Length: 137
Image 1 (tube, rainbow, N blue to C red):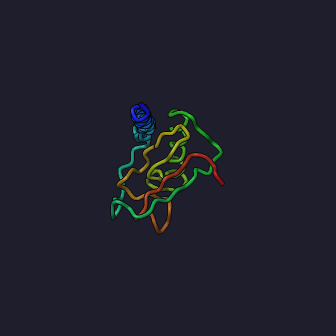
Image 2 (image 1 turned 120 degrees about the horizontal axis):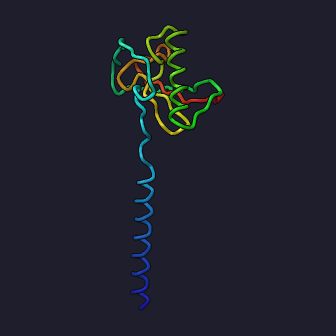
Image 3 (image 1 turned 60 degrees about the vertical axis):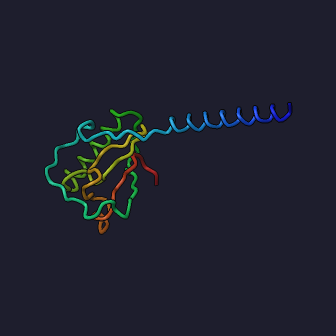
């Protein structure tokens, strides 16, 4: 009787653990990538392809501004302001980052996976630049 109860208890334990593992896998989906069209990026006709893919380096930046966002509308406006600053003030061809991460949990496509960014002089051709919205200094 004790062995039967022990086997039943072990089976219940494995069923419980498996259901928790499956539940955790479902909870952790990949974040959404908001396309340039969705955040209303300016059209850019000139891009330089990255020399090697995958790149050996990832450079993480913070936006350096005290503006925060919690939905696609607010975050899109901030990403657009980065692009405007980079094109109009810095005279770059586009937003300098390959991707921007918003506090809404979404990733915003900048120059994307294949194109050289303008975020780390000397390393732009061999890195992906990711900026996180906000000021973390």
